[in-house]
Image (cartoon, rainbow, N blue to C red):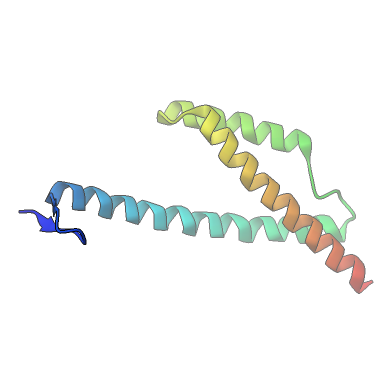
Amino acid sequence: MAHDDDTGHAVPEELLRLRASIDNLDAAVIHLLAERFKLTREVGRLKAGRDLPPSDPVRETRQIDRMRAFAAEAGLEPAFAEKFLAFVIAEVIRHHKAIADSQAAER
């Protein structure tokens, strides 16, 4: 059985089911990213407390290589995984710099 969308077009049940699964996965991705950023904030506080640089290019390169390999194994375009992780890493570094600046201002 099909349902009408906002424009009056019939939307097949299969499409609704697929979209619901996509919506669930999107929610899971957001929750996983939130957990990841909780951990990276802890890393940022630890780095700032020990005067370590916000960025670790060697680790970042290793992580990108890992993600490219995971992506290839999962059937996802490795270049997409690299772009996604590069965006995440840039946000993490931005957070680490902000934490370091905040801790330095408190001293």
